[in-house]
Image (cartoon, rainbow, N blue to C red; front, side, top):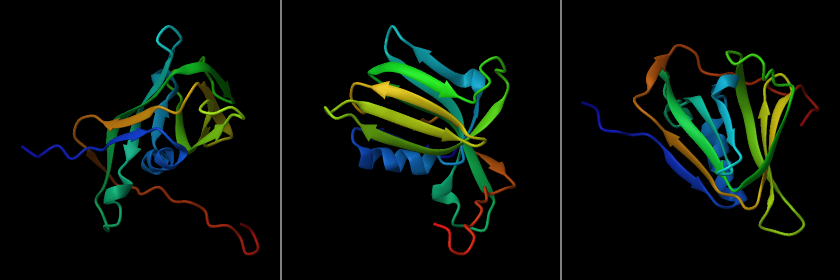
Length: 152
């Protein structure tokens, strides 16, 4: 039996969230696996995370089931996400935090491929990413278009 090697990350400031964002980049998420519980003020998602920390090898590449959650959530809004299609799959491109004028509150922004986004209002930044279970092999490494000459 293989030793558990999954990531367990906590973010309490924007620098910490950048690490979670890097680990979650290119993760796949089913719309039906996005959850907001206003009673306990938690937003969470089950994702299939590409294991970038193992991707410097020539392969085989791996994905792993993971959970990402945000605590102290005040509200959640979404744009260009088919909430009526629970089996639709989206790809996470980035996760960022914008503080309010009065810290520690702010807004977490999860950008999805196809111009979708999730905006999470939080009273403070409190996020967790945790791998769950064993990774599995995938034949493809996510590819990112390089900007054309002269573009950022």
